[in-house]
Length: 340
Ligand code: DAH
Image (cartoon, rainbow, N blue to C red; front, side):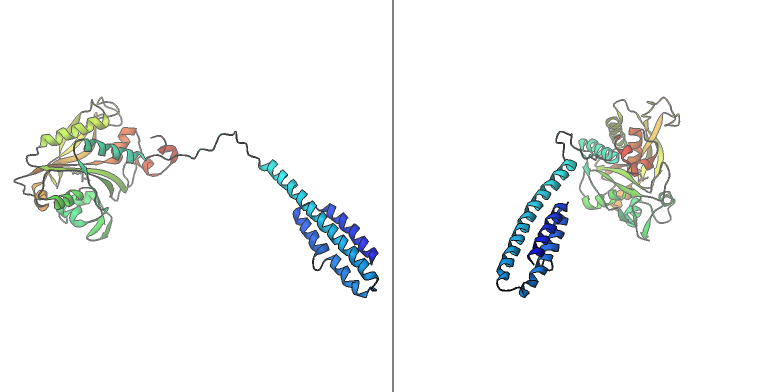
């Protein structure tokens, strides 16, 4: 049995030296010193020994076990250090390399334009109002003097939710909502930026787009006030040399109504492809608030007058930045957006 133990020791020492990883060392431990390991197996045979032999063999077995345990610890420590060193070699960090900078987003060109429009009108004493994107037929049409079956409804082909509820087709309903809220007080001076929805989709129309509405009500507001306000806006937005032109038009909620052009921002009025060689670009609709609309809003149209206007934000952004396809504004391509 002594010889058996001696052999085991030699075998174990050799096996230990062959271990290359911490995992292999663990396997080694189980194989030789575990409950079902080789050392235990040999020691089970001790019962058969004589009482003289037993302490001698027992002592030898203990010595071998202690020896192997110590060796095992040394080997494990060394292997751990070696594995760590190898890993550090692969994963080493060069602290002198420049850092990785996360890409910063920026404000969308449409939000930039809306902010700029707000700035300009706040500078003229206007407040900013908002209204719901899901709107009642009453505010979107009726209160703006567009009764059922009026042909003006066709121009705003719409997304209906029920016969009385729709995605608003313009920001004008906020005119009616504001009058209802503010009446009988004057002055009213508001602009209303927001999303609107129509069943249109091509390179110059999107089913969702943005408008900024304007409304001013007071005693003695005249058409010249409207013209002066719009000229001031155009000059602040597009440059001090801007001209504007008003052409007669029709909107059910204004009387008289006008289509407003600015001198072409590309050719300064000389005529180019963008303005169709006219020198002018149409940018908004406007007019004096229809007396019937004032009355429906609760105001006495004998005592107060008002003007209103509405502009498309996409159109203004496209002109300002020379963008030729509206869909680019909604594709969220960073290569496009990072140019503004
Ligand atoms: N709501 C009109 C549209 O979406 C634009 C408009 C025209 C608004 C004239 C106005 C206005 O306030 O006076 O086509």
